[in-house]
Length: 283
Image 1 (cartoon, rainbow, N blue to C red):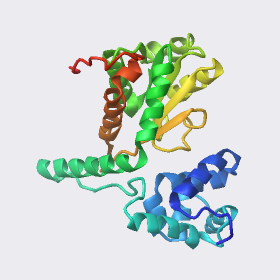
Image 2: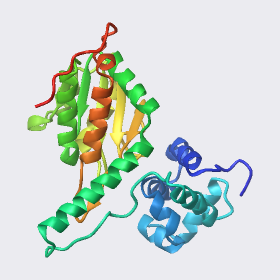
Image 3: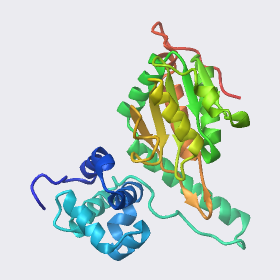
């Protein structure tokens, strides 16, 4: 390994995120796979990784060398060591497959197992400092706009609802009648946009994030990757990887993250410096 190359999987992930915008298009494809599927990257052959990234195997080697490693195997070893130590973030491959003939109990077990793994992964990818920083952004904002579409829509809706119950001024950007741009046109430098999205990223969410940046507002991203389109312009990214069971992707970990964020710091989020805010149970 060349001197100066990241010595741990976490250090490498941070370096990839820092250099992501400067990477070539092919290297970005590889970077996303490394960030999103670290377990798979640790264990698969270069040929398989190249096929999944849509590049030639030689591109994987050039990617590794650009970060200071003699070859791909040295980079993979960091993630294998992290995986063996139980610190590897992400879920890797789908938790479990089942066919249409599976019984109801078997299907339920598959979803439960998947969500349990996703929740355990969440404990490794989001820490106390992340949550406090997010709560600080919310507390400082005059108005919090919350946006999320497709699979992220219920997460964003719940988050807006929870913020309102915690005493924070919050507006849910639901995009009714295609009015996303109109709903965020009043956002300003004293406001915060919380954008919730994961691959494939909703165009409406990216539009809202771009509008927020254009108007000088801060952005808090809840996403599946620090290299996602809504993460690049965010002041803070809370990474969450959901379980994929069969053809379905859960939202259990995202909902859990939102609950911990809002109800872990209710007084801070409401901007109340004179004690803990009273939070009414959600219905």
